[in-house]
Length: 129
Image (cartoon, rainbow, N blue to C red; front, side):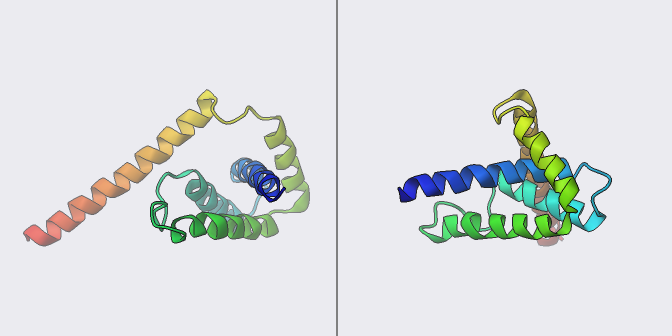
C-alpha cells in the first residue's frame, strides 16, 4: 500500500514537472517564475545530480527533497489560471518517450556536456598558466 502511494506521488510530480515545462514557455508567467521553472525542470530531467545517486541514501535525498520543493516554489509564483491551463495541456500532451522527450533529453545532455567541457578547459588554463 505504501509503495502505491509513492508511485502515485511520483506520477503527480512528473505531471507537475511537465506542466512547469509548459508554463516556462508561456509569456503570461512572470519572468522570475519562468527562470525558476526552467531550472527546476532542467534539474528534474538532468541525468546529473548535486549528489550522485550511487551514494547510499543521500544520493536520492536530493531528488526526493529538492525537486518537490522547487516545484512547490514555482507553483506559488505562477498565476492559478495559467497553471490550471498548463496542467490540462500537460495531461493531454504526448507521454514521455516520444520524439520531443528524447530531443529534450538530448538538449539537456548537450548542455551538461558543454558545461563540463568549459569547466575542464577553464581548470586546464589555470593549471597550465
